[in-house]
Image (cartoon, rainbow, N blue to C red; front, side, top):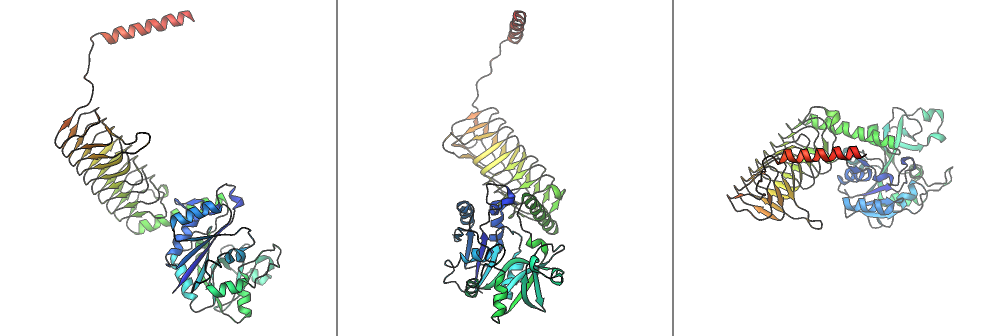
Length: 450
């Protein structure tokens, strides 16, 4: 079943009051547009066309960063939804099968709904996605005759009987790609707004004796985002659903409302997540791990049995093997931490390898940046790094080696060796009292002089 996606993402989003194009505002760590693209990608479309307009360069960059095979076309003037879809005509000139029109500011249409929509398009010429609205307000109404969709009527044009209909139009449409563009070519703009409306294809199709029907979904899937308030509501809706899925899958969330998840967060069952944890994009946590309170994770992998936090930060490229410990106020970035290794307190480990069962003492820092380049630190298996050690990269500490507390390690340490790199302690008896007496006398003279 060949499918192409047309995702409309040209709107400015005036009510967002933002320099950022509306479809690039984030929910759960990803732009609205990316949510729509990811849902559509489950259909394995042969082509995805994003129609950009306002902020086209930024929209194009985001779309291509997510999927480099995406085709981005630009709608120079915003003349309505049918005009927007028509911008994809050239990009789909030789496409076959079904075209599905989605919206970059409607991020929650589920893959399951899209599969039903695409399936229905195999037996009906046009399929429209509808929903039963709790408050139909000013939505367009789907006028049905049994299973057949007779027409879509806008609220302002509807009779009292039609306004009583609660089956509403989401705007999402599936149609044979060639037929879609043929119908769009016949749409006029003789309306109050002077725009070309995609919804007009239903009436045109029925006038030609073509079939039309509707597939329905939960109203929550059709939630559009047009303002900051709606963005916040969409974020809350996403988080509530994502938390519920995790709980059903066997993950313990001690205070679910305080845990924030990304679109692609993966957490295995029997993992415990304590309160006030934030998951950024690209996080996988295996089964049986513990993520303690007030931790922040992004772009990382946490293996079975590991404990992270409290107050820990895992940044992109952090790879924790099984049964590792990353504790209070520890930051790990672009580093592999071997099985059973411990980084328990107040440390920064970046651009590094930490071997199995190594112990990293409190206050240890891998000094990885020289102001221009990043450099790598290697810490061997069973190594013991004393508290407050500065490891000046590039540097290699061997297996079962040790560093003395307070050392600044600038040279490689061989396996099994003890490295000490600190100045000898000097003690001057009585000097502390003499120094303090001198300073107090100086202060008293200054106060008399003022």
